[in-house]
Length: 351
Image (cartoon, rainbow, N blue to C red; front, side):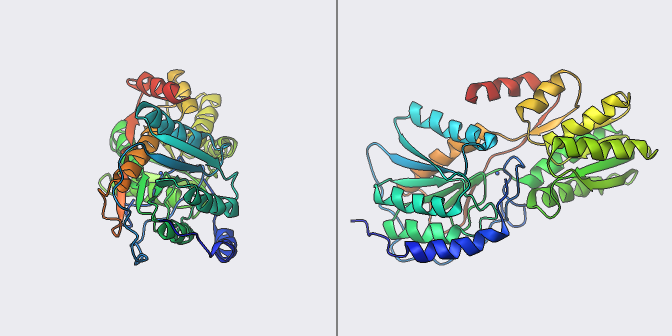
């Protein structure tokens, strides 16, 4: 029999303090933080704290009922992730209950308790507090009801399982592409996400780790475009007007890459400067088809949603050690004009 939680008010009070430090928008501490489409940042996983007694749910049979708690239905990338989960549930006879926190952490914490009280078998959560630091509050409630907690896309501290991509891998793929496209030499400019954000830091460090093998490639600019297209365009325009020669631009996400590519095109330098982004979003792929950008690194939104449900079912059926730090990684993939259509088709399936 499930126990009713008695600490709701205390938990929400603690959460209100925790979320002051991080409200932005899919990984091991050595590999980097989970990557989430760079609408914001995430934190690297830590070792799971000692769980409460009897947190291992008993294996269950029959139809599964899973709650999906999305941070906000206005977050386009996260809607794509959720649609991947919905499609998998529809194809496999799993009931999926969806709740929208509307970027309100207190509301989402209440949703966790409500779903547990309604008897769900597992909870999948895109945490509002994208640092993941308020995860222990979510875990405490789920442990009281013996309900497995699955974090998706954004790292959820102390979740029983996290499903995400690895931003370090994204930076390595982008850096390797650019190094080869530049012929191993030349000047590179890097458009950073919000300064200090985990995705920006980890992706940039990964690019630099690749360049360590290419001493003839020099980084001539590093400046934030704050994940935004217009800001990326403005920064790139300033670089071009400075007179410093640039052979390639690496952007920490696609929105900045598109903005930079627009600046390059407006300056009549499209044939001279390579531009690459990360995320493989629809806009970037469409601009790639038009010849505006040269490459991106695709983050599989639907794949993360599907894997979150698969992981939830495995947790329900006792296939994980829920006292361990479980991480299911979804790989990034390089996209160029040669395979662009494949990824446009993939987006169309979940749009």
